[in-house]
Image (cartoon, rainbow, N blue to C red):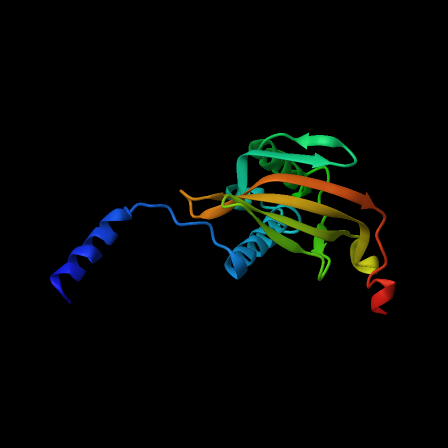
Length: 181
């Protein structure tokens, strides 16, 4: 290495501070992270019923708009607190003891798009099921579509859910769809 090359290399290294936050992932890495967040988020708020385990995924400024009830959640704290109360009601001795529900992503319905250098938009369809005992098992009770805005948090090196639009709720559609039969 020549002296000039060494000087240029040292200047380039000095131009990028060691504590520079990582850039937002793109492409398959971004998609993979959002998919993992989505699975973890819905597990914690539905089937796993452990909102404290996934509270770190929700932005403090989170807000949700729901087609049937309007603005049910106006902060990340409110979302976690409300889910915690619902999960406590499912526990032994709670008013909804034994209640179980499940959310399933409709295969092939998800799209994830980059939003500038600050976030991603996830859109998908999902269905909801409730446990109706050993005789009936899991019963599909409805479905809907959602759009999630995930904000990249460079200081944390991860995405957090900033906003959720939950819409097109209705009766459980036939599954598999007629076109797949």
